Image 1 (cartoon, rainbow, N blue to C red):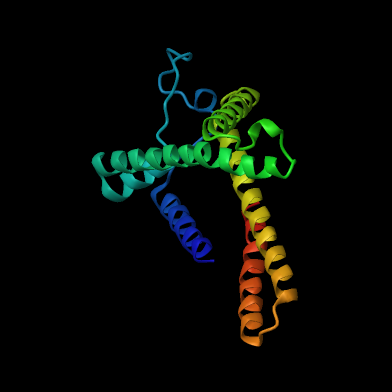
Image 2 (cartoon, one colour):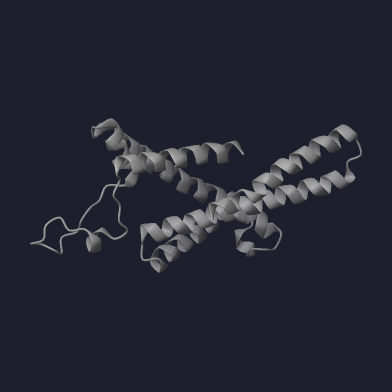
Length: 194
């Protein structure tokens, strides 16, 4: 819930600053923008919205550039996290026979190589299917993130409900009921992303 509040405050703040600073962004700059009418085929580079907001707030190129580099580093770390976490998660699911047995953790080398290869192939497939369109891929990322959050919260609520059935101590039952309530609120929060 704290993450949702922080994300909401940051989103509203960035949107307010973007509106106040007059950020201009188009989905296809080569089609809708023209820097030089005499050379219409020259590609146009538009600055990201966050960079434009930072430039409007700070008025120099140093801080917006640092902000852009920090954003890129967070995205790189996020992708590395996926490539580290997916093989482990896929192995646990494959142990329950919901994924191919080649993803099971027979040894750590096979676990990581098969999982990373599968994730790499899926990533390349989505990049080709969406023609490397950043706007479409970001929407796909948001859908995937919200779906994974939703499934995680559903699993947590189901686990705690099963645990509540076998718990007899009143104080432990109250704590579990409180935890179920918090998780249920988290369960319904990801659809807000949609």
